[in-house]
Length: 159
Image 1 (cartoon, rainbow, N blue to C red):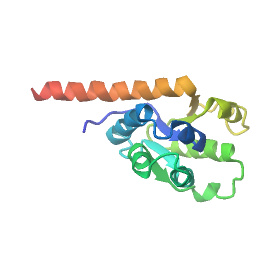
Image 2 (image 1 turned 135 degrees about the horizontal axis):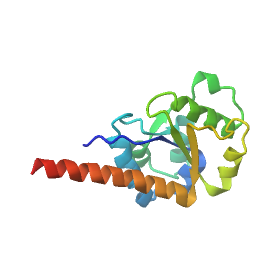
Image 3 (image 1 turned 180 degrees about the vertical axis):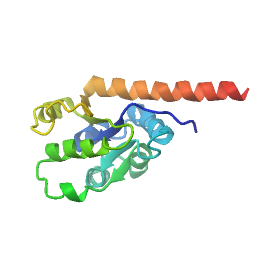
Image 4 (image 1 turned 90 degrees about the vertical axis):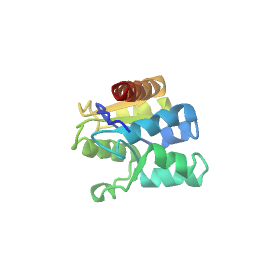
């Protein structure tokens, strides 16, 4: 598998997971992105373990597809007492941006995006981007094209 360096890590909230479900059109590219990351191998795309478990338990997404596209991460101790899920997710994305590639894109639904953008903890932080709907799909497609380009370049060198 080729190694690709993506500009941001991807964090998906529970609403994004519910909207994607078992949609292979979005999950398949996410699987390749997740597996090919040169900077965050198998940690490129993340969801909180509680959100992932809830999505699997409610039959929104199969466990295999979830784990192929995302790594499940436990809520860090410093966020255990955070009651507001939107504040918690923003703070979690900020903590993810403390490591390379030093930026995180939070994927959500159009209905919930304003709750992140208007959250007091967001305040246009330069290391966290919030995408939903078509913007989220465009980002996934862009990252997937980076993977395809790297894979094709590697196969050209092998001939």
